[in-house]
Picture 1 (cartoon, rainbow, N blue to C red):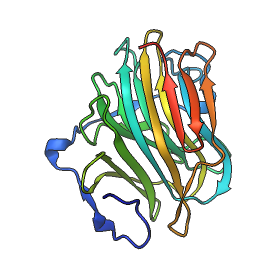
Picture 2: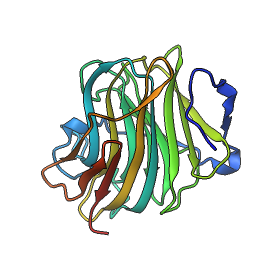
Picture 3: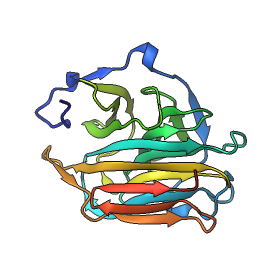
Length: 246
């Protein structure tokens, strides 16, 4: 059975995905920030106009160094695949010290188009969000184990694997990110009327600097964007569900 990474588990416990499992590629998108969304559009200027239904834990104030979730996409559909529109179901780790996710790492399932696994890196000093289509193949109603943790020297490991796998799969390494976690988020992000998103992120945990893990004890559900229509609920302190018409 898979276990969460700890300082006592060697790095080689994570096995890189085979090329048959990886969808390679990179795109440069907007400069998001969950707290900045004001409406459900794909506009990038003057502000990021995306919408969210998430569990959000800001102002953590500790140097946590990892995040874990079971991500379970049930409905994942973008009504438009042009102009930067997309729908994602994912988790974020804010790496700056300001109390909100102004620099971050993220990973999860996305329409790009179709349904694919991705991860993204917006590091201190970056002028664009770097997005990579890498990771396991994505199918609806399948649970994916996702994990990010600090490796050292401003590197974070990105891991993902379908539930039931025997090994963690190393997707990539995110560079230039400091050891500072001041916000944790999980849920859905969408950009257009008619998008459909239903899913959950459960077993939400963070890693302490001593290698032990804890539940998201202070996260709150939040729906962002005045035109939002997906709703987040938290049936427990370590799970968030989100739902729109599907």
